[in-house]
Amino acid sequence: DGGITQSPKYLFRKEGQNVTLSCEQNLNHDAMYWYRQDPGQGLRLIYYSQIVNDFQKGDIAEGYSVSREKKESFPLTVTSAQKNPTAFYLCASSIGLAGFSSYNEQFFGPGTRLTVL
Amino acid sequence: RKEVEQDPGPFNVPEGATVAFNCTYSNSASQSFFWYRQDCRKEPKLLMSVYSSGNEDGRFTAQLNRASQYISLLIRDSKLSDSATYLCVVILNAGGTSYGKLTFGQGTILTVHP
Image (cartoon, rainbow over all chains, first blue to last red; front, side, top):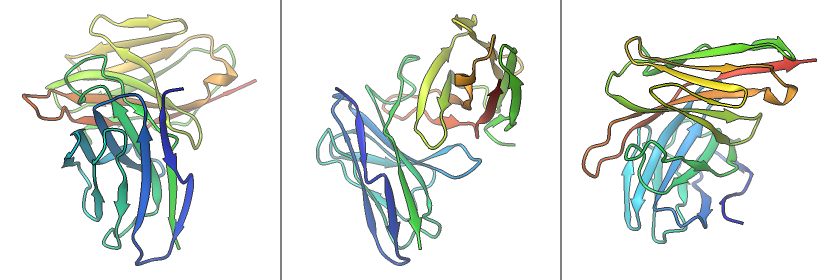
């Protein structure tokens, strides 16, 4: 079955530690995205990648880093510089970048809930 | 003013009711529009795209009003399983190799009760 997987589902971290969230897709999609969702708010874009070895900052990139060494994988590192990291993190992918097609649906992974203790 | 605004609700309706949500957007250059559904503590999933002429998918009807800059979602004959958060999504134009910015509303909570 094709899809997007994120691990772990729940993650607890001590303040001051870096942590990496995994995102893998086998949909053969070029574009991948990371969002965070806070209670009562919409999704906010952290980083996105159009192609391997390329990625761009989204609206709230400070305190985060990403890599795109393989088409299938787009891990997100939440660094100690992120002041309020507790949130629900969602990874998504699409055939191409959003905006180029009215049918460019983004498929989401099941998410990772990060809690900083 | 927020780029995309939704009435957060919650909307509590009985089974069989008709319910409508609106979503307003601030940028007139917005190009594409969608409704996503998000179940509690789950990921969002595409419900339907919104076309200029309006479109229907079973009990769901989506409409776009460019002049007033809003999209709407109408659900007829509500089912218990329709209970979820409904997110509107607006995409700005993309140019060249740039990303078409995709903006989510904060979501409208719907609860359908027996």
